[in-house]
Length: 298
Image (cartoon, rainbow, N blue to C red; front, side):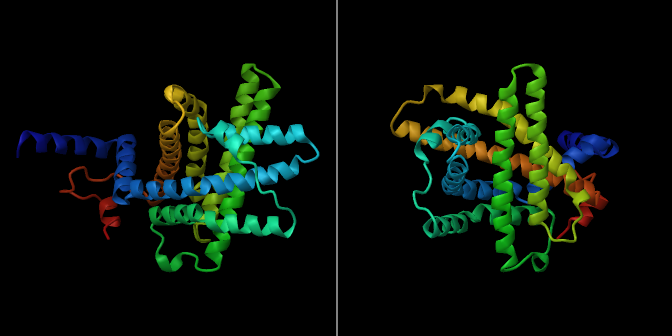
């Protein structure tokens, strides 16, 4: 046995004896075993494709809400655009919503929702895959379509409402109390959103207690990303000029921004699966499998 193997075995024995490191390693290993990075990329792709049509629907609805209250309508659209670093202003300037009314508007909104459902389908697939839900237990047509629409409407609307509530709370005052209230409102709203999204993603046999932790971690994590990430991306993009370089940079930043958020949420889901199934400790080298390793054998 060489020095490297001895060191690996020593580290393995140490992490198995300590709950914190064993749990953290089990989450990282299961994330890799489930090819969660690939799933995150898939959700990011569909999320980016669905971004424009969903914002088109959002600004249309917000415009209708604020038709008799133009200042309210402008404030709502402004709060929505702030959620997207760098591209927010461009989205605010370019997306004006549907011009049709009545049946034409309803048909346009339905077509837009149907085309954007891919992000909801991809997210539901990712969550079920991480929880190892058998294919025969997953919802089929038309229930899967209804669940995806529920995620788009409830989840998407909740995200935007959380951003708007946080913006309004922050606009009331500039002190630490009002800033804290803004953050807490955002976390509380996002927690409810993720509870809804996970409920619609998993079969009914799953209890809410099984994914409460992942909902809370996702809410806190996305709020932290919004507080620090948006400023970081905006600083990174200061040197962006007009033309093709600006389009490429904006696209890359938006993809990265969405991907970071998706990865955070899927890590949170992994945490709940490891905790719920007691899937730790895991073997570091694979030569001496643990009980958790044996549970996860295909």
